[in-house]
Amino acid sequence: MHKIFILICCLLGSTCVMAQDVASNGNVKVIKDSRIDVLIKKQVYINTLAIRNQPGFRVQVISTNKRADANEAKQKVMQLYPDVRTYLEFQAPYFKVRVGDYRSREEASELRERLSSLFSGGVFVVPATINVTPDKELSNEESN
Image (cartoon, rainbow, N blue to C red; front, top):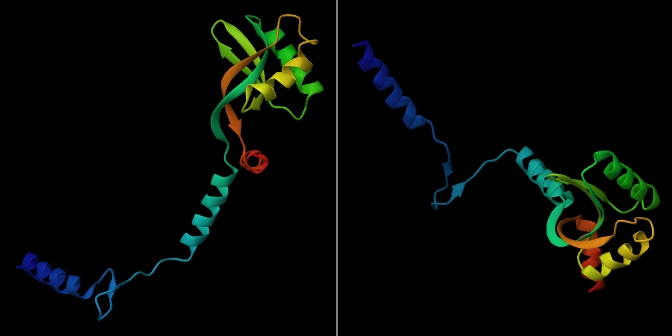
């Protein structure tokens, strides 16, 4: 008897509760929290700051199996060219120091010419997946 009473109460209570407000013309009125709009704006802002990966070129200044030599080469490039991003990559058994994020081989070749006098082992332009920030992406589109 107790179970039947609870069942009846639940059925009567569920008819009173509605998740949506339906207008007389059949349209659904959605009520949302205003904080959702704030979160959406924040996510859009974060997405515009994100680094995008694209195919491009970097300049490889050293490939060695000694981490200390690679770190030294990276430090040297960072001191001479602080505005250019420098990467230390490990591809077993070699440590490779690569410099820059360039979309074309010609852009990377300009840096290769400047770095070739500093490193005796050979400086090469290599294809790589580069990091492009949105502001750099926009400036490249405007120049084209």
